Amino acid sequence: MGVLLGLMILLLAVYASAYVGPPAPETLPNLQQNTSSDTDPQQVHVSLIGENQMRITWITSDTNVSSVVEYGTSPGAYNSSAKGENTSYTYLGYRSGQIHYVILGPLEANTIYYYRCGTYGPEYSFKTPRSQFPITFAIVGDLGQTGQTNSTLQHIQQTNYDVLLLPGDISHADTQQPLWDSFGMLVQPLASTRPWMVTEGEHEIETIPIVITTEFISYNARWRMPFEESGSSSNLYYSFEVAGVHIVMLGSFAEYKQNSDQYEWLQADLSRVNKTRTPWIIVLFHVPWYNSNAAHRGEGDDMRAAMEPLLYGAKVDIAFAGHVHAYERFSRGYMNTSNACGAVHITIGDGGSTKSLDSDFLDPQPQWSLFREASFGHGELTIYNATHAHWSWHRNDDNASIIADETWINNLSLSSNCTVEHY
Image 1 (cartoon, rainbow, N blue to C red):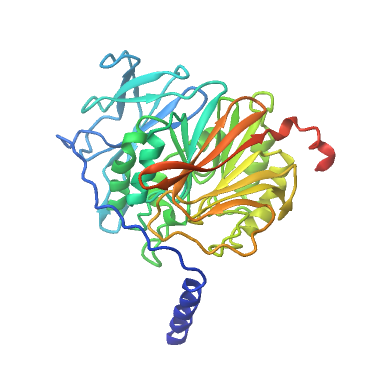
Image 2: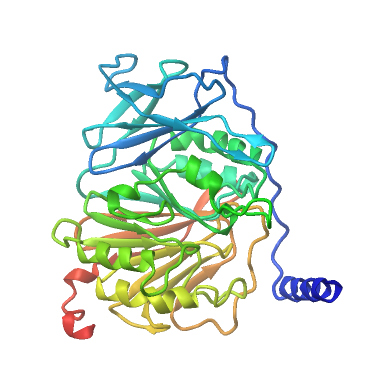
């Protein structure tokens, strides 16, 4: 046992010395919900579920509050209501509040709705996404809850985005369950007003050997995504459509090899895509498949080898990942080489985290790595029409949001150079 422990310590020391980033940002003090009653909603967030529906999720300290949402298109005038369900979970000595889920719809596109959770407490509002182009996505990974997180959120709030996409490592609670609550409070001002669509990272696993053996307990309870509606058997991977975009959220920490449930689900999901209806396909997962940073290098290779042919055959346009606490954009690629018919890969794991930035990039810079920088920030993707999209990466710089990288991306499905003969 002593030899094994010594070997583990040595391996950790070698890993830690492989790359050195700037000092880690400090986690924000635990936020306290400012509520007047245990029946008041806490940690409110909304997500998409189906073409014209939204799921409202919130938590109450009082377990007797009804899972009901009243809503309408004018402040204080709730001419519709919907009833849902609720759950809670325990984790060691922690017990969550009552977690409520209510689905609203059918809803009109590009419309502001005012709503009240559980018939108690304050009024909130959200805006439904557009039903057609243009549409804007805010994209950020490895968010955490630090001062840099707060800066990133402030910058995102200044944009007129339709949907936020987060490719894993959400709260960085890491088994400390009250940090899930403080994260929910931190993001509520944004997440209660626009749909947030997320997938998992390693920080959401939260197992403890022997003691806690079930993975993703907190994540699955707090961030329920539309997996069942997309034919998936797991909240760890799913798809949805908005405007003219088909978005696939994959699970880096669910089995992904050929014949696995996730692989077969992805194969079926991509085969059903109607490129006339949704000419754009975007995929998100946590561990990057392309990475010129010393941090986590090679960790996505097995998943890439298993699943990249499916993405290539479906003409996926863009793939976003997190995990590496830095920003990097690649040219289109396939099977670890530049390929004009492959996806554009972008690492956006720089939302705030609780770790230091990963600043040790490989030298020389690979030819297909077009831009890379170890700074905190977020990205914005505006898809203007069926053929053209604009991507920009915004660096956090002294409380300002600075565009440090941007490019136009052409849709693959209309490229005469990427016909069926290429696959």
